[in-house]
Image 1: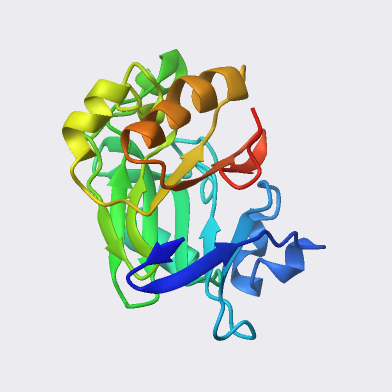
Image 2: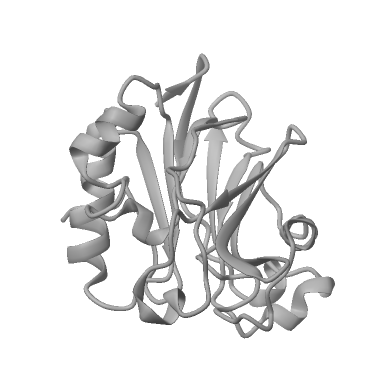
Length: 224
């Protein structure tokens, strides 16, 4: 893959313990699933690999109204993880409104907050709100990146090929990163009927999904 004139390949690191990932300030989160770390090695400098650290939807807080945090809180917590780019899902609170959000930290100092367009399922709809619009493409140090949360990548939302083409088809996108919390029929529903249709509409960029229940799956390993 070529991104901004630089050539990359990527692999996966599997931590042997929670201590390798969570700094002391985040040990309270140790009951949540381990994040997946995706190093992208620069061929001309393999000893210092930049990384994408992708954490599932709701990872920083759990799916809990009472544990909801602000964007600033999420940025502080996500800053405890190593990575050229860190994406962390959480429940965001603004006054009396709650969102499924993902904080995005880039090594260049940029911080973005992405919200799911709308709650999914009765349990979310009971107390969560949505942004009401599709996510924007982010200019990150790893390339142009679409961070799209869980059901927003499904075919009934922005994963529909014709809709994805209308929204982003003219943009050069290098990565599609999906934090998710999908319990049933993960591969058949979210991957095949969502993410794969989405990336085909975008010219087949590399993609990674990090899910609470099913772990990590990405374009380099997908054989379905």
